[in-house]
Length: 302
Image (tube, rainbow, N blue to C red; front, side, top):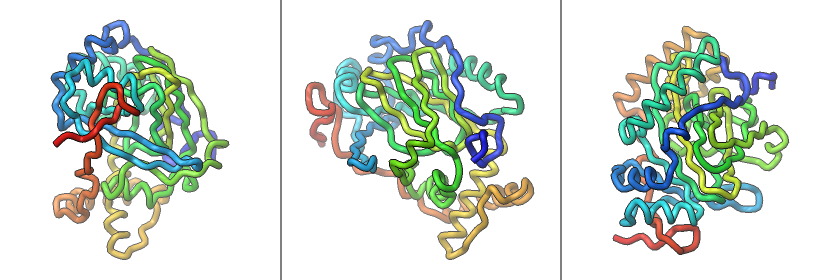
C-alpha cells in the first residue's frame, strides 16, 4: 500500500482534519435536537445497537422509533448505547444542511480536482459508549463533528482490508456496509481523535470504524459522489450481477476509464430490470428506545 492509503484514484490520499463553524449556530444543543426528534419522520430513523465479541466481530440489533417524545428520546440516547441516524438531513433539517454545504465547499476547495456532483447526509446522535463496526461507504464522506469526542480508525483501502467482492455486495445492497474484520488490522490503522468543531475526510472507500469516547456525540455525516465514484459504483454493481450469474469479472481497479464507463452504463439498465433484489430494504425491529433501561433499548411495543 502506498502513502495514498488506497488503491483507488482520487484527490483525498489520507485522512485529514478541517475546521468548521457549525457549532456556533446552535445545531447541537439539547433544545434544538429534542425539537428535531419530535418532528423528524419515523421512516427516516435508523436506530442501531451493536454487540461485539472478543475478536471484534459484530452483531446488529435494529430498533423502531417508538413512542417517546423528542426530549425523552434524546435522554434515552444520552444514557444508553444507541447509534441513531436521521437520514435525508438535506430535507429533514434544511437550515443545518444549508450551513453544512457552505462548510463543505471550503473542504472541497482544499483538494484540487475534487468536484462533488451529488451530496446527501445523515445526522448521527450516539450514546457515550457507542461504537460503529468496521465498514466502508460507497461515497466520499466529510464527517462534521458537533458535540462529544470520537475516535476514528481509518484503514488502507487495499484488497486485504477491502475485498472487491465485499464492495460489490454492499453497492448492490445484498449486505449492509459492515466488512469482514480481523484484530490484526489494528496495526494498519490511522487513528484520529475528533473534537467538536472539526471535520474529517478520508480516501474514497477507505474502511473505518468509530468509537465514542465516553460522551454523547452529535455529528453530521455528509456523503458526496463525484463522476469517478459514480462510474466505479456502477461498475461494482455490474460486476455483482455478473458474479451472481456465475461470472468472474475483473476488479474495477484494473479497468480504464472507458471500461468503467461502459459498466456504469450497463448498471443503469440492470437496475431498471431489477437484476438484483435489494436484500436490506427491511430489517426486523427488535427494540425501541426507553429511558432508564439497559443500553437504552426497551421492549418493542406493537
